[in-house]
Amino acid sequence: MATDSRDREPTPGNDGSSRDDEYADHLERSRTVWDRWSDWYGMSERDFEPMREAAIDRLALESGDRVLEIGCGPGVNFERIRTDIGESGELVAVDYSPEMIEKARERIDAHGWENVDVRRADATAVEFEEPFDAALATLSLSVMPDITRAVETVYRSLVPDSTFVVFDVRPFPDGPARVLNPFIWRFLRWYANWNPDDDVVEALEVVFDTSEIVDTYTHGTTYTVVCEKRDAV
Image 1 (cartoon, rainbow, N blue to C red):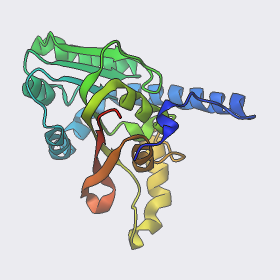
Image 2 (tube, one colour; image 1 turned 180 degrees about the vertical axis):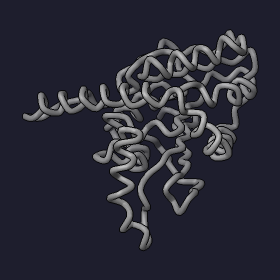
Image 3 (cartoon, rainbow, N blue to C red; image 1 turned 30 degrees about the horizontal axis):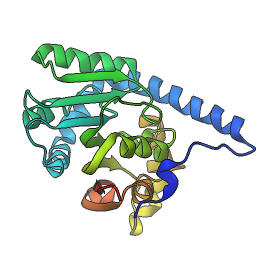
């Protein structure tokens, strides 16, 4: 079951100023890193396409649905989501990298999608005027400066009885291959500004009413989690 953490306000302790500085530094590094990779994201788009498609399948989207995507990058999921929700639905996507936003908007313009909106924003603090029927995050939550706050943003933004699907990456969760994790940690930190201090799966379990890892790939280093927000009591 979800805990009251989703309703709490950020309350820094005595080291609040230091945490704020770390948060700001992480956010700025993410902008720099993903601006740098924006021209090369096609490799990731192809390599992870089957996993992303399977994750979107788990949303069971219908025509007319309003969908939120957190950390959209250059919009690699837009076409599939747009196909599922049709012209009567709406997709709102958020990313912090200006270069990724530019690429995403170019994709929208090239297809002439009038019901896809991209916003540059910090996913831990962004607010929306209307709630969503479903939400998606692919390869994005683990690089957020505060993963729990980002998940809380999604929870607040969803209608009751809705689904949030996350596809993400992590070091080896078990087995002898864990000996390689220090190298994987360094690579992910360099490549994606991965956040080693927070745990995506744990944050989802704490905030959402139900949360389950439904698919794993490459010895568990990539995985899909399906989360549910239940009816309000």
